[in-house]
Length: 129
Image (cartoon, rainbow, N blue to C red; front, side, top):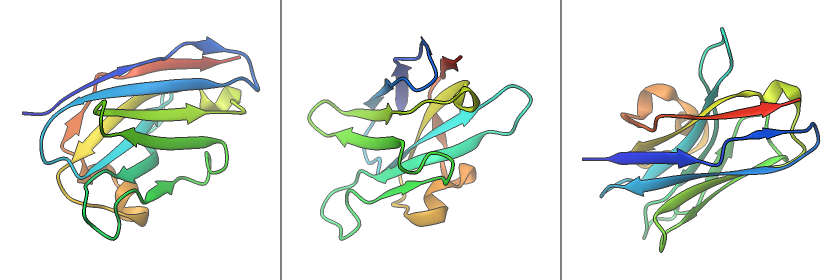
């Protein structure tokens, strides 16, 4: 059984920063990701990280072009928590943000593929104005 609990969503001014957290209650998760969905838009994969250990790809990250250089995904193994540090926020970053988990190890474009993730959190709202 996998449970993901997001937190940290808030309203922030353009140019500001925010950090999202996702507590992970699971075993055998090897890849985690952040997705977002703006009103009337499809869900978009924005960042992923290989959280599994003892693999050449451990720690590898993938980012969508829309957030590259502004957002950073990290995973704290000791706290079993996934983070998304968001800097230089723009109004177009306004969305509900979800964390997702997969038991497969994923890198690159595959890591941002929604169909790869069977486990999802409930979402947290980020509003930039």
